[in-house]
Image (tube, rainbow, N blue to C red; front, side, top):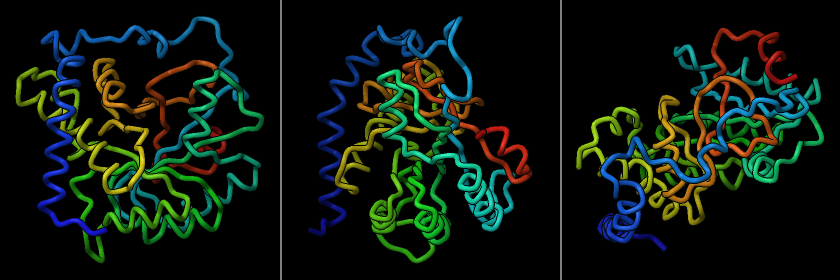
Length: 278
């Protein structure tokens, strides 16, 4: 059923009003978001003696645009060769749901595995990544920010594009509403900044759920910047896990809420990729 922009606005406004009181109480009731740490917060701190071997860790690869000039953008042929490398050396690509289930249970995975994610709202995700993911059968996750997803358009991502990508096996998750530095917003600690944080985290999640028709479980921090207070905001908003850009693999038997990702850059060689995934 198609909804008019006015109805969408009403639904979003109702979600805002319904959620504000609850989230405001839990997150901002103390007046100092920086001090807010849940009882389970120490679970994402490193443990002194744990198995950090490759058999007990999962790298989460982070890509951005395809065929662009940015240092984080790979050309299509390079991306395809990296996907082929994973297949050739026998590294299994798993979806985030599978990964998080093992983290939650503290269970090691049976094979060398990686998860693959892409950030932002590039049309190349629909035009180039989706066919490649289907070809290789890789369950990839794309984190988008909602302000640049439109109802129609030929050269920008639309909600219809995202739903089509999901049918092709790509999971769409949340990267905020407008991609600001959330740490800077939190540091301001003003009523306006708090409202923005609510919109960027809680309301962005709810908007995506309305358009995609399902629960949105994961949040990627814009620029990878976060604090434990921001991680707590994500947890209170209903996200199952959050993702940063802190380097390194994730220890599967450590039940972290905020998980690491490894940026893949344009000048990363095949040897670099091997060192990460093997």
